[in-house]
Length: 429
Image (cartoon, rainbow, N blue to C red):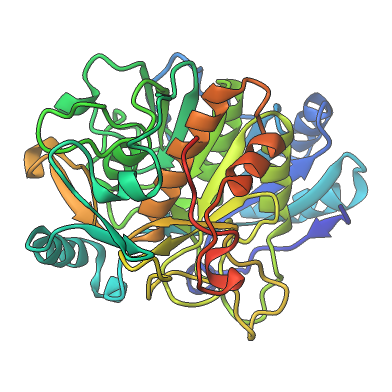
């Protein structure tokens, strides 16, 4: 890639307006982490120690430090103002450094056409509406409705008829965490980590991560209600990369989550998160593309939400290497909120595939009812992640790009434009 160096705006107000944290994300040549880290030390930005894999909590990286993530060749750099100019000069002159760009913010990608009303108000309103209506998907004159054994969304995607369980496959859910006390996850092989940096134990105080984990990997026989999960015998790596207050995270926490998921051997990495596309942006953020490309090359398929603003797909979903997911409703039409390819955002990709994303029943916080139905490309993304895990179980050679190709190849064509639903509705093997 062509070297890219961008200085973060000066002043907290400018950074806030641009949705930036004040830190930097650095991409460097893999294998050069020792040399790069030593050079950062020399310009007055000492290294911080990465959280051990056995630890459950990540504390905030001290200001003025850098954190090297060697497996994929990335670093998070948080310079004091006195060292910022030296950092930029170093990035410009050192050949092993490919890019240095400001760290941005991302947020969870769950919502509806009423998304702007706020996360908690919206989810409560949607749930109240959906709980009063049966979940019914219709196609070619036939209908698939939720019954006592499984949800309609599992039927329309072929999951309910599949003999596969996800056994032997690890799925990473990079989200708001996981309610590990939920009865539907008891006895499962789960690694839960907090990468937000607030020093708190890994948990889910939002509900979004628990909902998405339930879709991708919930049990075959829930404690209550019909089956809603897909890869019920998979193992889980649940990384809390988004905070409790609105599900906000940073490029750094996402980068660290992907780095650790690859290190743990996750065949599927599910990211139900987004940043909002803005006019004038590049068609893709090069660092996210490098990150997802390298994760794919290492054998991890990265599944990303298209987003929920009826507009162009923002990062990281617009990365060409990502398997980007749009949402459809019960009529198998593009959900009104689902992001898509648009004429005003030239060169920005649309979804690669589509999955159910309206009225999706799954696990919720144990202190708030334990189950809930939500709308969003987040839910659709979790569907694709679960189905990808079934495909990964069916053939151990299906990893990375081969697994992405296999998911796409099994899609059922839909009537809506390719720019909205990609190759069609995902189907279980």
